[in-house]
Image (cartoon, rainbow, N blue to C red; front, side):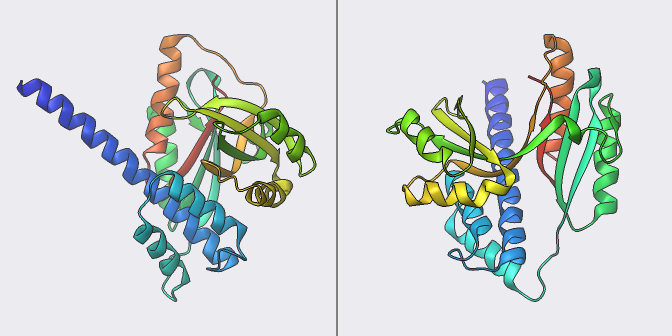
Length: 240
């Protein structure tokens, strides 16, 4: 009974830590959007995307409002958005998006994560050429005619429409567009009353690689360590 309780307690703690990290990442996303485009949802598409992402993650309304207030104040923290590139074990390409108020701390931590997991931090341009930067919208598929939506979005910059699966096993439609078409695609979805599960710019690998189970787990350990870092927003990689 004692071991079962400890296991349950560990699971709850891990889930709580993931939620806390997710809320922190979205708060930074909102704050960066406010600093760049102001606190008005109507006039700031990036802020609307951040708030949509917050709602989809069940982030409390007071936390969303607090992030907007903090970014609007005279003492707001200025976050630098820095992209780090490197290779994980077995030659897997890794991109690390960060938002930091202390780049010196962040680069040291990112380098340490790579080194301790058998990888190495690279120079600018050493990895990014393997990825396309695309606008990505994840939409609940239920109740939506995928073929009809695809045809409609082609006129608004749709690059490709894929099917995927959410964290809870729900079926998703994944709409991708060139990064310069992001605002137009967002507007097209808003006009149709579609609120994505998540929306934003992502790096999509063009030639993903597949590894056996053991080396895959080694790469996943690096990715997990990076994702838990307080300054890391997102991690992209070439692993299938």
